[in-house]
Length: 310
Image (cartoon, rainbow, N blue to C red; front, side):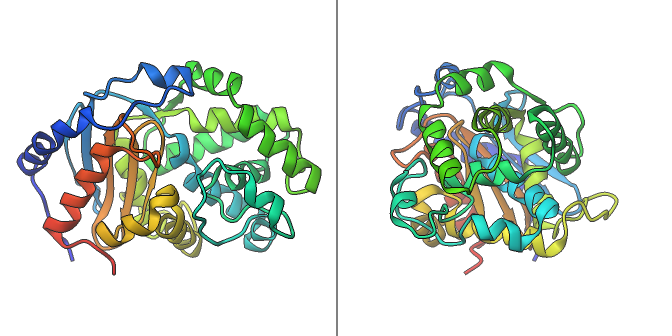
C-alpha cells in the first residue's frame, strides 16, 4: 500500500482543524513549555522512500518530551538486550495517568508497568550505557541524529533546565525505584539525563522522518543501513500501539489505529509500516495530555486514507 497525499490536502486539513487550537490548554507545569503558542500547527508525512510532504508552521521547533521514550527504549534494548530491560520494566498498558506512582506500590515486584509511563521511561533511561549524563545523552542524541538523518538537532537547554528544576514527581518516582533496585544509578544524574532527553528539539519534518525509520523496520530511508534491529523496532511500535497515547491509547487505537507516541509539547509521532512516518503538532493539550489538533489531524488522515492497522 502506498497511498499518497498532497501538500494542498494537508493545508486543507490544517485549515479544518484550526478552530481546535482554542480547545485544550498549553501545559504550564513545566514553565518553559507554557510559553508555546497554540496557534503554531503543522503536519508532515515522510514516506519510506524518503519523499516528504508537509504543511503548516514548518520552521517552528518543539521538544520531543515523551516521544523520546520510544527512542530511549530502542537504544536501551540495543545496549542491554530484551531480557535485562523487561526484567525491570513491564509490557502491559495501564489505565492510570502517565505520572502515577500508585502501581509501583501495589505491583510485586515493584517495577513500572511499561516503558511509556514516566516511571518506566526513567528506568529505561537509567539503562542507557554511559558513565555520566553527558555520555548517556550524547549517545542518545547521536541516535536521534541517525534516525532523523540530521546532525543539526540539539537540546533546548532552557526547557531542560526548567524541567529539571520542577521535576518533583519524577524525582519521587526515581527515588522509589532506587529503593526497590529498579534504578541502579544516581537519581539526580538520571534526572539530568532524562530532562535533557525530553528536551531534544526538532521540527515537524525531522520528527516524521524518525517515525519513517521505525516504519521502515529500523532501516535508514536512503542507505538501507539497519539503524535499529528489525525486531527491536517492532517492539517499540507495539508499545506505541498499546501505551503510546497515555491512558487514551485504547480510544486512539479504535479511532485512528496507527502506532503513535505523543508528548506534552503537543507533538505526536506516528509510524505505519505500509505508509511511513507521520508527525503532527499543536501545543494545546486535552485532559489526557495529547494534542487536541494532533488528534484531529491523525483521525482525518487515518479516515481519508484508510490507515488503521486493525
